[in-house]
Amino acid sequence: MTVLRAAALLAGLCLVAAPVAARDSLFVTVTSGDPQTQAMAMVLSQQALQRQTPVRILLCGPGGDLARKDYQGPALKPSGKTPQQMLQGVIQAGAHAELCALYLPNSNGLTAADLIDGVAPVTPPVIGEHMDRPDVRYLGF
Image 1 (cartoon, rainbow, N blue to C red):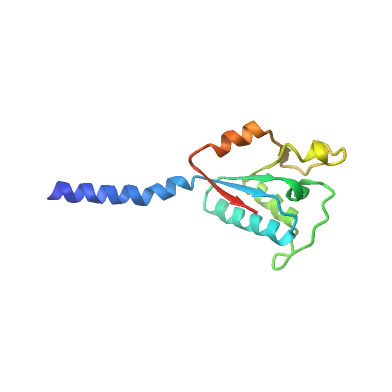
Image 2: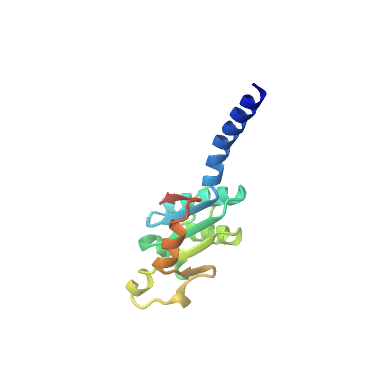
C-alpha cells in the first residue's frame, strides 16, 4: 500500500505542476487602438513580470501606434501614465516588445528610426516559431 500511496501522490503532484509548466512564457498581442485596452495589456504584462513570467509583446495595427515616437495618448487613471509610458515600463522591467512586420510598410513611410527605444520590427517566421512553443500562453488585446 505504501508504494501505491506514493505513486498516487506523485501522480497528483505531476497534475498540479503541469499547469505551472504551461505558464512559462506569456505572449501578449495588442491590436486595439483603445487606450484603456492597451493599458490593461500593459498592466497584466507587468503583473506577469512581477511573478517572474517572461513576457513578449507584439504590437499590430492600431496597437502598433504605441511604438511610435510621436504617440499622443491620454494619461489614464489611476497611474497618470499613457499606455506608451506603461509599455516603456514593462520593457524596462524585462518584457520583449516587437512591432508586427506589416506595420511600418503600411504606415506612410515610417521606419524603425521612428520607434521608441526597446521596440523593433519582427518577422512572421520569428513570431511563428515563438507561437509554436508549448510553454507559451496568449493574451490578445
